[in-house]
Length: 364
Image (spheres, helix red, strand yellow):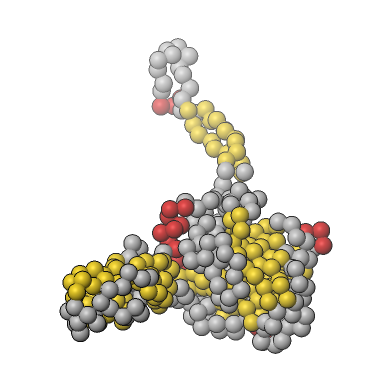
């Protein structure tokens, strides 16, 4: 809250005629002092897609051990380590009231992190969503990163990296013994980067990495520097103990053009809008063909996407049965940002049919 003082002039009523005010009688001043709510936070628009982990189209709440697996849309675990772990989305209410978070549990410890080893939660933001950050120019703007985090006691690192991995910003944060394995909120004020190349189109604008371990190859100094770093020399080895649990939730990235240094109040995203945003980067679909066919002829089926994708997607296709007059195998798949097509060659003449399930990835 702040204070505002406003002084203005009002008329003095003529003592001889209460209905008369003369030009020379506008001479009384009044001062009003009160409080007002100034604009003291960053913008409320969250640049993160699926920051509340509401959407998990591909994996739901399944427990996974795969590299670059996505327990929630747009959030993956990136790692190179001899240890093993599981990662999944779980329903544990956050301090903000959100329903979901993602959880990593160390299964087999890696007590000695090699130079090229790393482990962390990561999300990438499309250039269009951060174009007004003006990174790489003299007008680069300050932003605020905020997320919920639960971990064993230690020092961890939040980082920004550009698409070329030759510019990075590192910020250490500490989970004290008293905070160990409890819900915390971490907030970082990040000055704009006036150098480097930062995409402002459909490519990767910025990658956010929350490092739980980082070998020397990926260690840099706090602040902005040239290189693709994700940790510092003081980043703890989160893989050191089997049973360690790490959780991430309610991730927000906000433009702070007035340099307030204060994150806005967390706002729960609208589920339907968030689902629509997520389908720009990954979605499932199906292809079905049914018609009379002639052996040796090529037939096509095509389906449109409910949401146009960021770029022509990589397609993972699986035959789903119902095949007649065609080989029971995926045919030739092609697609663009709005549709996908499959062709197969008939091997008999009769009523033909096939169906295929497709996963479509336009992730960065």
